[in-house]
Amino acid sequence: DVVMTQSPLSLPVTLGQPASFSCRSSQSLVHSDGNTYLNWFQQRPGQSPRRLIYKVSNRDSGVPDRFSGSGSGTDFTLKISRVEAEDVGVYYCMQGTHWVTFGQGTRLEIK
Amino acid sequence: EVQLVESGGGLVQPGRSLRLSCTTSGFTFGDYAMSWVRQAPGKGLEWVGFIRSKVYGETTEYAASVKGRFTISRDESKSIAYLQMNSLKTEDTAVYYCTRGRTLASSDTFDIWGQGTMVTVSS
Image (cartoon, rainbow over all chains, first blue to last red; front, side, top):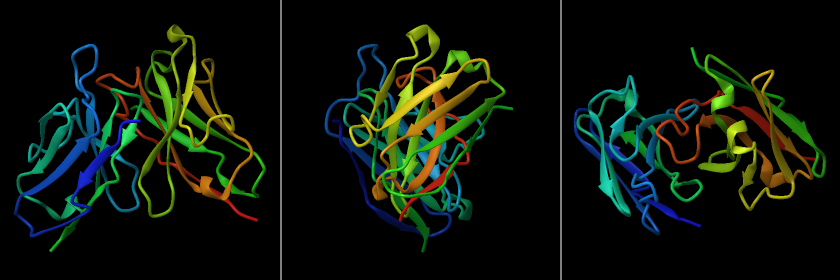
């Protein structure tokens, strides 16, 4: 099974400052079709998960452009350029290349 | 508007069964695989399994933790996906979400989620 490891587990950030989330996989996420199926999800308190980013760097419709995804192979990053209060919640990476595995999540809180 | 609505959760004793439903609307159900993902209280997300679309034979795959106990099915005429849970254990206590994707490796994988339904396994 592919293991997804996120860091840090908790991320306190001052409003207006950037935030960076790391996700590493135990093996390459490059699919046989050439794509890399690495997604990022946001889960606000009391809500269902919401997909933010698909295939490493593609923002979903309605996702603010302060969110961006990057990476390749086994190392991936989600960045928020300027954190807003509504960004509080847990962020999960997920790979869909080798079945499905989620990372354990990173909790974003306001400092 | 694309919608997924889970139902059927509740309190059940260990060893008993429960069937969850995921009622969908706003998209062509037959074009999509349907997955179930669960979240134990205070914990992260765990993929439970999925059922492929008709064109892929409606075959199923499951996580090791539920294989042999849980069964996913679908009713194309009603646009509903089901999760039949047998031999329930206390560790199956979780919010159960349904989500969609043409396959597990596609641009639309897990783009829409339901609101979830709570399953509590306790004596």
